[in-house]
Image (cartoon, rainbow, N blue to C red; front, side, top):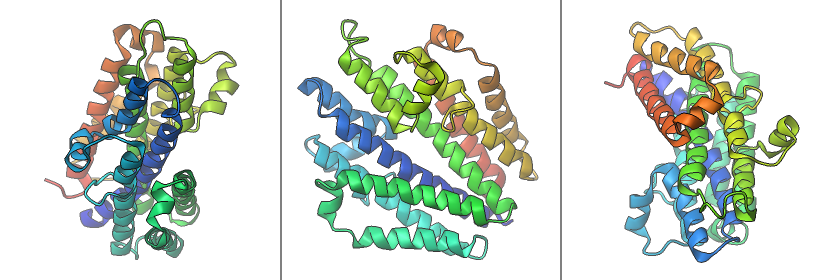
Length: 312
């Protein structure tokens, strides 16, 4: 496969996963801002910007941080490359450029998603109907992923789809967990309180794992258990370990001339997540651990681009 084709397929899948993650983050934030003091509400509004690293870009366009302004910025702002609008637009453009490498069902799903988004009234997205819109984004992402898995031939295009999807998912899971633990960490007196519990429950719901937590642990929500679930639990599809199982499998199937550095780092991350102990992670500092993992995911993305996608 030509590197420019691989790049389009890789980013098509990554952008759809990013749009879904953004919808999940905004949906949880919309619920969290209903609780707590003004200071706590402001922290909850800041969390999505911290997760996406867009605090400065938001400040350039908005004088005040409000829920309506946040949804507008993260859902519709064309100047924000991580907005849902930009992700769906770029995913569709990338799919259009490689239509002969993907199935007609994949193309029709992305094209219909983009056309529906453009036809939506703005007030439906940023107003009272925001929750319905965010659910729609998640549904369209699920549909695209299911159509992809169910129709595309198991070749290089499939491998780059999987690689892009699970690299993006791992990155978002790590960011969401780090923001709750490091930025939204309550005061010592509030730890274990109602607000702390609600924030942890909201985090679990943002990655569709609240029911999974209850099923596996059958106990009160504890930070160390949440970390165990989202970092090391392979039965949880959005955990870092589960994501890197898929990343490793995809990279095992991809053949490149100078991909040793990319594969070495991917296998190292996979091994680290396979044999980690959550008690040791907490002793060394969860924030420090996640910061290192995020740095390595970013480094792996760069190595993948250099090895396969023609990026110098």
